[in-house]
Amino acid sequence: MRYLKLPIAVVCMGLIGLGGLEIYDYFQEIALLKAAKDGRLEEVRALLEKGVDVNVIPNNDYGDAALMRAAFKGHVEVVKTLLEAGAEVDIRSDRGMTPLMPAAQIGHVEIVEILLEAGADANARSDIGWSALMAAAGAGHVQVVQLLLRVGADANVVSGREYLDMRGKAKRGSSALLTAVERGHVDVVRALLEAGADAHIEGLNGMTPLKRAREHDQSELVALLQAFGAEQ
Image (cartoon, rainbow, N blue to C red; front, side, top):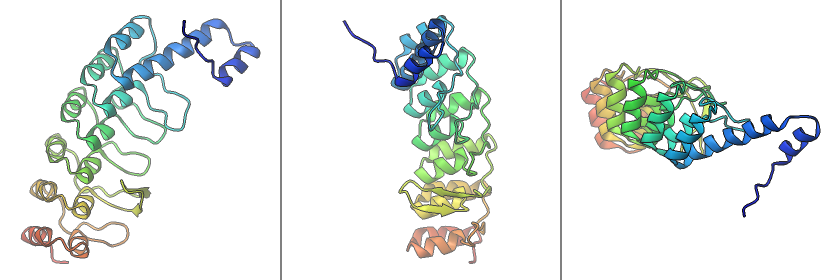
């Protein structure tokens, strides 16, 4: 026999009068979030059939709904099931992120395709101005970058607030092209330039792609940027 340890907050809610039904709903919702994250498809289906809210958002530091968790982890069938059950394709986390953003950053091509087909906004931006295209470009996922560009993702938006890059360094004012150049992703840089990305785009600190390529001793990128007209 397994015993479920009640969170202190739930015990307190019971003491102040929260009914058994509400506590039951709470655990059902937590179960859906965990099942979606872990990719347990049959459990997800069973919970949805019981009427658990597919768009429930947990009260924690991230506020990631079930669709966000499944998209991040790459659980294709779970993502499809959640969408079929009415999951909001652009549901936001506490940081303003949509499911498309982590899927793009991790490089889950099929999930990116599914979300876009379901109507995901390719130009949605997080609270720090980060977009799915920026995330994919920074991670070097050229196929995802090409997918997003084909559906109209804007290659020339610049994030407007300070953010932490994948190495935990504070950055301010970047774009898909600037980020791809910094990480040395030649194929991504080429895809962005061929799609019309501005070779002279500046971050909020005045950094241009060519300056950044030179700063990082990326001779191949310097030549590529110059071939697309970059002069400084």
